[in-house]
Picture 1: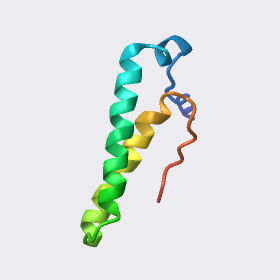
Picture 2: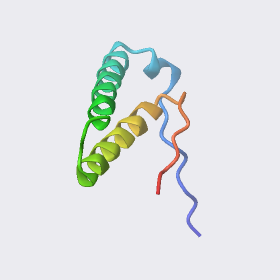
Picture 3: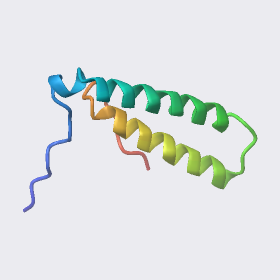
Length: 73
């Protein structure tokens, strides 16, 4: 029986690094843009693609360990 790996999380030192802060700010900015785009008139396929990109960005942000991101169906 395979034991699942623990979730990837950054250490306190990594969360406090200048690099993480820059990456986090950029990804949060991008998520905001994608959410506004998703509010527009999009086809079902375009909406699904945007939602997938938002979900992936949120997964990245969850590496900080402060978000509880669950997989979606």
